[in-house]
Each structure stands twice: as structure tokens, then as C-alpha cells.
View 1 (spheres, helix red, strand yellow):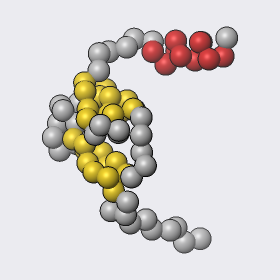
View 2 (view 1 turned 45 degrees about the vertical axis):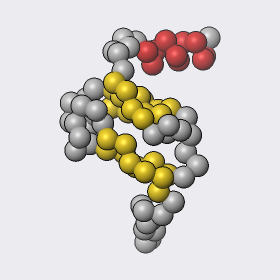
View 3 (view 1 turned 45 degrees about the horizontal axis):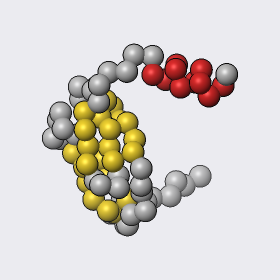
View 4 (view 1 turned 180 degrees about the vertical axis):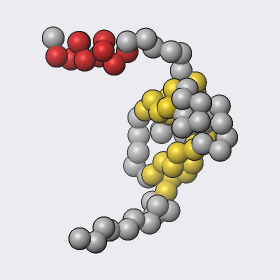
Length: 75
């Protein structure tokens, strides 16, 4: 089975660099909106990317954040 190739430059809106390591970056595509928290591949710090404004901010550490969300969602 042959895998399909994707042109990563197609419909590209821009690029946002991590504030902690300028070598680490994400690509943002047209039509992408909202926010996402992404871990830096180098230092493991969590950053919040805002795709609408094409900005990024370092986040404060949230201990047990995923567990709190899961408990809220399923209980």
C-alpha cells in the first residue's frame, strides 16, 4: 500500500515560532482558528498558540490539568 504525499506549503497561513526555542516552530494553515497548547520539542515547556492572531505565549504549569478536565467531562 502506497502512502499519499502532502504538499505542506499548500494553503499555508504562516509559521509561529516557540518563544523558548526559535528553532522549534509550527505551521498554521488557512482556515485554522482557535487556540492549542503544544509542548516544545526541546525543553518540554507548554506554550499556548493562538491561530487566529498568529501569536504564542508561555503557559503556567497546570498540575493535574488533564485529570481535572477528564473528571469534569465524564462525571
